[in-house]
Length: 421
Image (tube, rainbow, N blue to C red; front, side):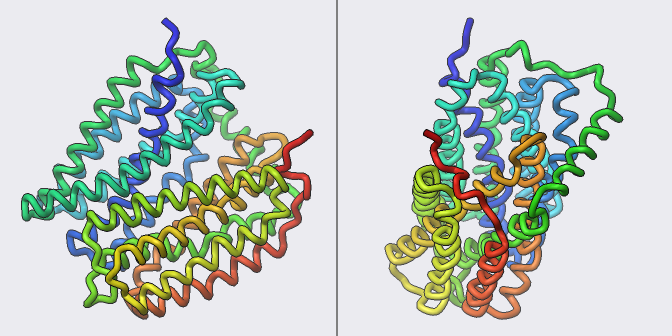
């Protein structure tokens, strides 16, 4: 029986987005509610980017060991087990060590699931359906972000009110997520098609894979403007790397510590719902204008969009408004600008990856993208705690100078991104 893509594409990409949100965002809020310092939170959770940084190292082996379908189903079961492990350890005496260990397992499983799911998408659909469903998959990835950052954080916050026990509430929420992934595992085990092209290349030796990898790596560093490109990939998002984790902690930190003191339910609305909508709309607009006029035409407006709205956090940290409406507007502006400006970054990764080995080169670009967020995040919390929120956000705005500097060295074909007649 032929399986409709509508039966598996939306659920596959929802399942791809949810564990990433759990590792990168939900963990932040949970650790803050459990009393961890900003320094420790940002240090521990930034290291969780590492699987996405190094995933090009093991992605070739997914092609030769089992099928991509097998990897998808197996990783969803492993993610479900990791979520259950987080839930089980939270109420225990070694909650920090235990939860971090299971978050690491979840991060590696999620990164592996990403590789397999994106490869399976190309095997399970013909070119026409790939183009048709590309917007659908992105939409359901965004829905997973809203559910994770928004609804699930709200759920944990409401459980805190009902149970009057923070640890028990977050444990229950993660047990719920584990149940969702067991359901995904059962559903995809049944519903995913079995494309004839989806088979392991069992005769290829590991030495052949490593040789192919070194050729890919060598050609990556032989591209024109390699140093300008590397600087752009590593430093364009440096302000965001500093801001991303600390801004979330600022929203929920108490007024005594300089934060806005939002409850988990309020945070879920502000960042997980309004913020994600702003991010999505900004990204859509960025894609529209770049496809009409080309990346080069819109590069500098996008640079300004990703940097200037960071000023809203300077305002919030000094004004500390009590109005949730004002907070929502500020976060929407910042996230809309980020979504619009991030379009330039993603399009440049595609531009840099053109030519032979474009799939492998793009994977290396995304690894550098993860590294660009990981490194600033490692010390962002310590910096914030040493200078306070207002001075920290001023430092973030000053760091935006680096975004302008690395962009100035780029040379981009004016026709890239334009719709061809």
